[in-house]
Length: 312
Image: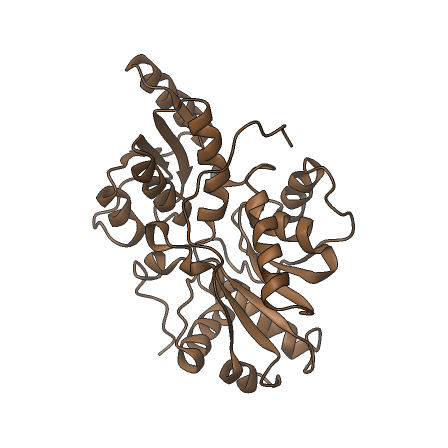
């Protein structure tokens, strides 16, 4: 991790709430005080989500460098891209989002919010993302801008500090909890939690966002001085047929959580993470009498762009 000679930029509302989930717990065979949810869908900026914590560190760095534009990349329905657009608006700088594939026929979900926040969208088509980002950066410099490239998913050894902050909040809010279950995308959220809580208390659920979730999280931790060592717990069986697909376990998790607790999850990240949690309970890896926290990392706008989430 680089020596931080800059301060994070306050973007969110902290601490986020921790709430019990007794009805869902009862539905899956846990006790009334066994299952809790950390509401990082309520982080405030740009419809919320886990990216706000990471962007506080990245935007602080960008501001210290005098950046006049933020550039980042992701899928068409990227939650990270949406929050980056909102953060740029809050900072008063330009934002360019380099998105996979081609522009969709309808503007919905995160795509709609990207444009509403004033971001310029660049569709990469079949080109490598790195090449498009590099070209976009060069074009901005030619226009007199000072671009700052925000890494994919907002994950870096510095930005993962946002989830060390989250770990500290959890320890204050729910002392003695046994584990936290979280989706693993670009890896920074899990890396920060592991750095703050230790690997034995964090269960990650791979979403297929990167080729090797374990290696990605391990690499981030290796660049974070003082991070604990130990075997990571990452469940890989919920990726299914691919990152953008919705498998039956994820669909069931979405429905069960909404119908017992009135909590909405997204089909790519939190839906898979909840499917992993339910699978751990079914297998006995999470047992009644232990206290588990589900980290809700947001993603509702992406859910609204999917019409295939219901099994009915």
